[in-house]
Length: 422
Image (cartoon, rainbow, N blue to C red; front, side, top):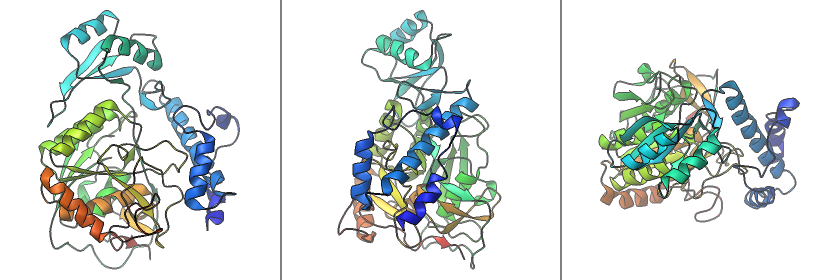
């Protein structure tokens, strides 16, 4: 089956002049080629062909990021690690007055200084001095900041694809026996997605309505013919994209997590992938300590991509995807750990117009896993987290090698939750 998929993946690889602009595999933000081939061959068991698929996915990722920067040169730039970030801005965690004054003396303009809601974690955003490119600005600010964490405001990307047309299944969404509470951080959710949804925006033009965010919401609470894995749930939806070309940035996600934590939401799903960020890492840890379980997709850039965050932060529930026959998606990304698999292909969700559409990707596995975990974690109580995870472990259906493994984690959650394509 792998050999039949590879030609489709290779079609994604750009050819011609634009492809020549991309850095080689093993460059900034990517693992060494030898490590990639060894990991993929060992996990998927096809030495001759699977590495080509991994390289195709990695090349496609690089081209996509390069195209984003070219299309938005004033809004998006590459940081010192080659990751897309908000252009011309530097982020510092826990600044004090002395740092702000020292930064101003070096030409950095203070844009925003605040504390993440629901936590005591402070941050400051600075505009880089005129003419100073982002990698150089980060280097200068690190000298000023000393031991404080300095980074770019890196961007995170949605982890799934939506097909415009799909056949409609039979049967309406059905309500679950209990109605859990859930939060999501994504694009905007359509107002038709359900009556028990609270929306808040964390980007310019937000909250709005997006196909990706609406699809994730439909898998949680149900929309029209699409069954919700937690139908009837109370849902808090944070839009971190809006109309901003630099949406999905670390600060927006951190603020959204702070809002959800302050609302005491017990389970939050994030179907986004980006690089590690020191502010977001701190906020994730603080929110977890307050009793919120975070569930995140591992991404769709294949095993040659760098580990995806927030899935790779300690304690975050990392979720991969399987197709309708229980096979791991070849494009599934990786995290530093893997907890569960869930359905992520051969299934329907609802777009922003409320129409049933075919979806594929780890984006759509994460909400199904989150919905099941939410049934075991009814309140944001940190003492109850171990029991909720233990209950999810008991429910997870073992796939692949006996016991936990790097392709399926501790097993499949919500295997019967997907609305199949008919």
